[in-house]
Image 1 (cartoon, rainbow, N blue to C red):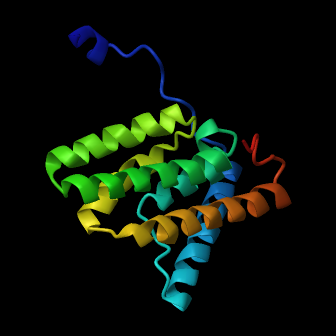
Image 2: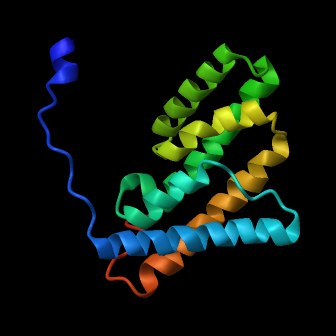
Length: 167
């Protein structure tokens, strides 16, 4: 096992080109402005900590399977729902958090909607003592805003296509 850990054979991947970094920065800033600005002006809860990581995927790696709309929306929904169910049934204990995260990961994989940032949603739900409305706002509405901004931003002026698939 020691050899596997300390003798990595692959080099570090190259940095994205500066143009792609700038595009990712702009998209992440716009999407965050959209859901955070709407939250500020409407008193709706639209900010979820894992949305920042979702922005990284949809704007820096829009071709990734993890960045596709079904994965972003479905993954966040499944993971938040899982956290809410475990919170309601078992309470916010270290072991129930572990079971909730493991279950959310498994359910996202079973449903073919893995979205790595959503893996933190059960922890956010349980640590924040979220109620069932958390599933609608911020989870569903916020993830829809990210996807909507990604659809517009990634297809308007850049030589790339988003999404690569819908369902």
